[in-house]
Length: 165
Image (spheres, rainbow, N blue to C red):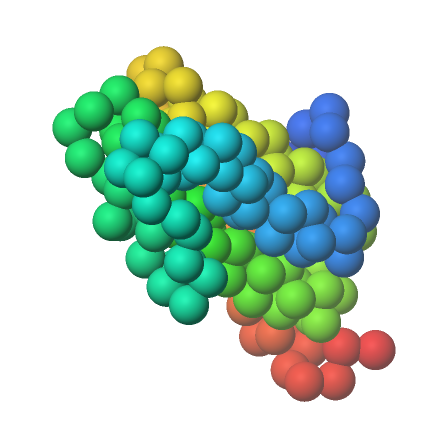
């Protein structure tokens, strides 16, 4: 089966992360760009002689993004944060399903570590504008990691159905 081959390939990944905690870590990683954006937002608001409007805080990144250096940094941080939230939801669902259907713990730990490593690489490359290709590859491999989790859960479901004991 595909899942067995996939499990053998990823089981050698050196970084192992608790599958349940990996969901928390993925959520926190999605917010790193949001919190790193704060000093740039404050600088931009001072430049415009404006104050932070808590009622419209969700739109502040879009409002302050422009062609200035600070505006581009704010836009990058906002985009990276939004993409992190999108990736988090896919990962969390895939991981919960894989846990529910009792996918091998070593496989879960390896995939959790792989996903977090890829998302960290993605975030760093996005925020530093290092390499667009590297960022795209990290994103794509992160998605494949989630697909792999879902596939492993799917095959376990086919074998055992709802009763996975």
